[in-house]
Image (cartoon, rainbow, N blue to C red; front, side):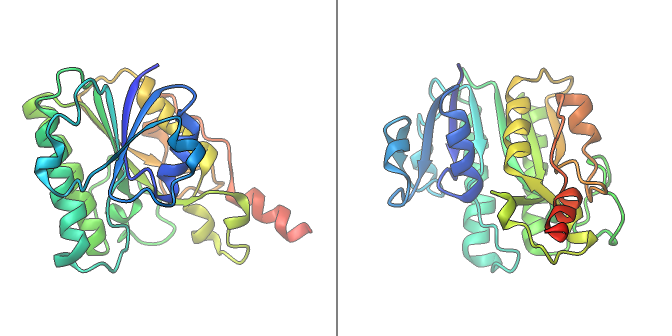
Length: 251
């Protein structure tokens, strides 16, 4: 059982990961507003209400924490740079890594990057985790910044990190767009596969202190290659949007 701190636990992915991890690990969840966080889950985790954009609120926050799952951020691809994008996607992760230097028991930071970091590649091109970044919007640029920030702290300060370029996450099959074209289906990431990938990120031994992997399901044509995650982390996705779409069409 590991001691894990999750930021962004009230978001769609964060909530499902918290539900998945709560029976295996000792969880602390941090954020500004937990008014809609399930009451039964509050009883099973440590809840800390803090604005993580303020660097003072990070003081001693990582004491006795072994893993950080950094999900907090602005996810709107059209977000204004001088608004939440600057506050949540630049300042907040900067505060995290600066505090991580002081955290004596911290083993690893697992952070949410995005498919938007490589979104400008042509359609039907499968993008590897080792391909050059190619963001298509300022949100994607902010994720490239986060990847660079993590790499800097990994190689200069010894803060081990794994970044996940999260594709089109769906919390359940009924959230799949039944009219999606092949490009839409190629970007699918299921809740089951995301939970499995996080387990892999926690358990794996890394050869280097920094790793970027693609978070995507086992689609017939995956927009992102999951080879790096399979080889380095033992990730074996199960779900396939193309097969699910065939089931929809047969009904």
